[in-house]
Image 1 (spheres, rainbow, N blue to C red):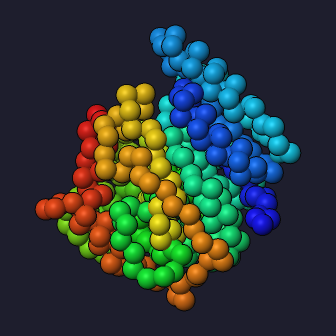
Image 2 (image 1 turned 90 degrees about the vertical axis):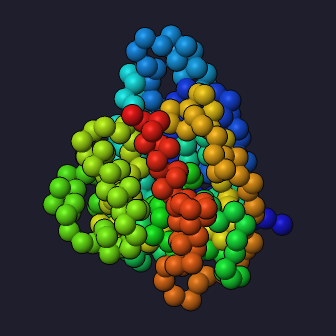
Length: 305
């Protein structure tokens, strides 16, 4: 008998995609969190279709039919990806000490919620860890029988973190980037000239306001603090948002609609907090004659121009 009760707050970020939102909300309903925080962006100016779709999304997420404390942070105007997610998560972590975060296109396996809760508890006081992710992009490759591994990569298609990690270091404007840009810390950590060039370009574009995104800033904050992320041994999240309605992910990649698997409990913890270099190398080299992550981020940059 499964007696697991989800006491960790869940934050759901939504906008104008009723179909995807309904599927993700159904997964949250099945998990029955005791607290739900919903962040919604407003319709874009000059887009009357957004008015109806945003209203339908809000109708869906308000159908909470289980015992749950619900809070809403709705914007009447469109703030865009960068400001809406950043301000929304700032609000979330003003309300709660830790949270599981899902966007409207990140469909989790049922075990994702327990996975996040247990690891939030386990690593709460270990500031070497920046976050827990539900993503695994190893495409079936496993390295041992442990339930998760540590990585330098911060994947945010379903993740969780603590207030002190977010509020203590996240800066949507990346004001520390100019001082950090020409120092050796990023080159030493990435240890790859091509990847270094891509990430310096990403961070420069964010700093100059040429990319309307929030997540590169989160990567920067964690790397600057020397933190690692936790990634599951098997994928727990399927991104169902690679379509024409997406803001950024309009082109289908191999990462779209990945199969999800369930984590076995009790979790098998690694003995030491050490980055899995083989898994990270596989993430870089999964594509023939190129980097998996570089390929992904080049496409993202192209869509955002």
